[in-house]
Length: 239
Image (tube, rainbow, N blue to C red; front, side, top):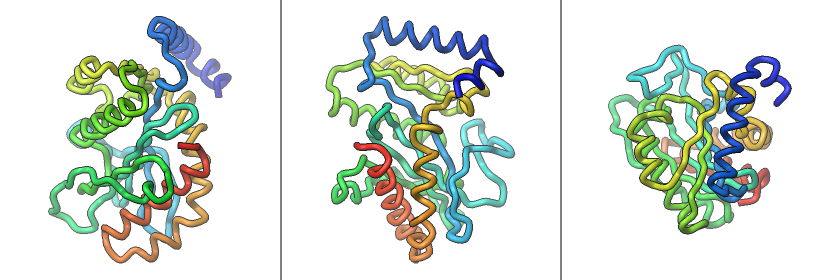
């Protein structure tokens, strides 16, 4: 992967690596307080169950990614190199004209000892600025419990909600330093792709379709999908 980066974007890849190294040294960051967050999409159709990297035909209100004529959920994990600390699942409503609900904790992890997972519903099944802020606050609370009074580094791509001015101000107030991958390079150097999403997709394919087909309504869908993801995460990365 690093070779492909060097061949396609040597200047920006090297510049990012230098900045990353300086930040780690200057702030004494260790593996336990360096985190990455990324999003991936999954169709909620039981007849076409597969994960898909985020792509878009157009952007709506400069914050939400929408896929035309498709029903997708969005999975958003926050993880270090060896654990998922918290994760989120955003599902689309099956019917229109419903109001977005707040993130709700899924209690499956209490039985399975997996990472905390929260889910919600909105019209698109996509992340937006309001949900992103809510996710960040929950992430901050979780790492405060795990590593009290420690400054953290959060690696992100350049999705619009990530680089929002209010979000950047929030990070400075909450002792979290955000570092963004070079534009158009996340397909090469995004850690989630290799560390998490690739293995997650393989494990989900075996069980996802049967569990989702058994769902009778939106709530069942959320519970079953969340349970599948947590079970897969426990197998892939200890939490």
